[in-house]
Image (tube, rainbow, N blue to C red):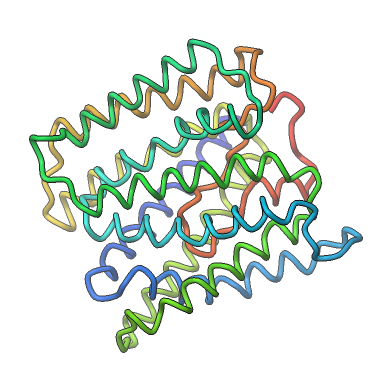
Length: 318
């Protein structure tokens, strides 16, 4: 079953990568704010179909209002930042920087979750950040807002993942999903008049593809985690760097330099080590990286962990 799960995850991340290509193409003419607003709007009916099936008794008042508010605001900023990075940077470089999310989750889990992080995982985080320096090459390359946006998206994605781990046991699934959606609509809607440009039919079609691909890829990810071990499925996300390299060269005529791939390899190795350490090291109380089963920078994307929670397939070892 792990082989099937891995194949499903690879398919999911291939679709996610195609989703990002469409985002990059649309980003040449549409602001990330406008793109996130409309793609989230199109995703809303699909997500609501899942939410109405939640028959858990209770109300919509959060048990942890401040954490819920912080997570919701953070989640509203992640896709816009990531989409801006996709539009400004070569895909491979954007992915390399977004891949630091597991490293940041490891660090944030210390103050927020009280996680005990030993020297091996801290060493992996340090090595991962060396990989970031290899990708960025400060002084040798011109750093721009695209690089800052990718790192900001990674930081926000890590923060919301750790907060979710902290409060999910006390909050209803519908609360954890609907507040970030509404916040995204509100934040992007307020900013929309500042950046709005009229859209042609092809642009609307592209946004519909973004919404559909994000939703379908998320469901495939759910299926992968349902039948397979998280330690097997989680590393499959790094296959996106292969797709990014191919798309960059074949579709956008971008040159993927050796240093970017080298830095990405270092970051990926660090992330995989952390996942395996949490799975088999036996010292992690919360396994925060292993439990982060969703790609945090897909507009309108549902959280895989929450869907799995409803299905009741959370594995004891995870």
